[in-house]
Image (cartoon, rainbow, N blue to C red; front, side, top):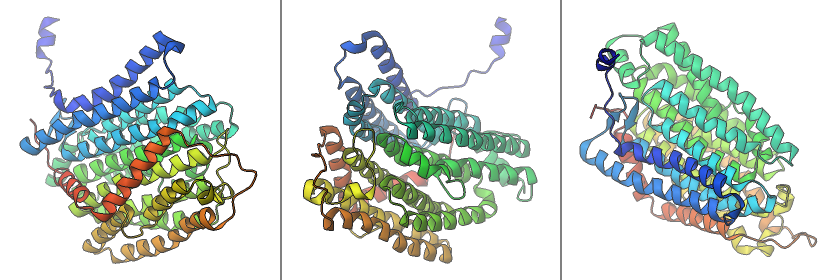
Length: 500
């Protein structure tokens, strides 16, 4: 037995890059343990404060990892299965901020709806831990495990409002369609392994550089199925059918996390796979991404106009935003990757802030999310209406907001990559989408409020989250250079790994 163990090669593990992973996952286990032991003796705010502290802890531990990568360059750990670069650290920071803001948004909602707060926060952190693994995975199986950890937790979060039939229905729809998407992704991984003989993205990149596999049927089918799996997670057309129903039925704080955190993790995994692994066959997957981008832009913008529920409007808006992000992906350049990272950070703030407003405005039972419920909001809560307006205008791409620069960057990347028609379609879609945001603004400021509407109470958690994202949106709308620089540094190391 000892001789057999002596022949086993134990991989070298660098623990510093893994600390953000361990903090997020470990915090979920610790919170679950504390709640199980202490039970009702804990104050009502404990789980929320613990989750905020865990998110801030991940932010703090990500800083030394960024500094070390800046000094020593990108590397990999755990037998090359985890990539350590500024790209992954950037996404880790986005996910950590998403967890902090979602915890703030959910605090008042969970008490109002009498839901199990500790279960919500444990699942939130476990899902974010899966997203962190996805953004760092150099191995396709590790990526799949991260995806399943993220997804299973979100399935439960969507269906956790047990007294609301719409939440149960949304959870079932999301689970069933998510299972199909996971099957496509796993089958795609198997086909890629059959074509290349490896599951490691670094090895796959080397194999594609040294061998012409551009006409290999197994590889092309594998990449196609991977795109199907990722397309479901990012809500790209035609894999978007679940989005409006799930967004409308899920608890509003859960939707804020789905729109921000899940989308960021899924796009990070897509970028890592297709840029770190399949860059040398980009000519084969670019046309497919081109089609997905056009379909998402068209469907998301046009169908949002006819919706009357704000959550459904923002669901189709999320599909349209996925189309804009795919515009940057389709460019298949360093500038395209940087534009995608900028867009993910900006959209995360806009999405969380928008659904935080909906969480506050919605009535008990998470009902009352129609446009009619927004009428006269400026007269009832002027600061809340102004904040929502800023976030909506940013999603529309109005100048002096972060959303404007996000759209500008992805369209510029498309033009630089000579995808002129895609850039034109993206600009037209932005014009069409602006109408749906203005509908909500008009309802808030120009329509009279309902005299029978109850007094609107804004809990401190959502108020703080909304203030943070509005300041972020305006600050990086006026002076976007710091976020530009971070995104630019993150994308520079995406395609280059070395063993450390």
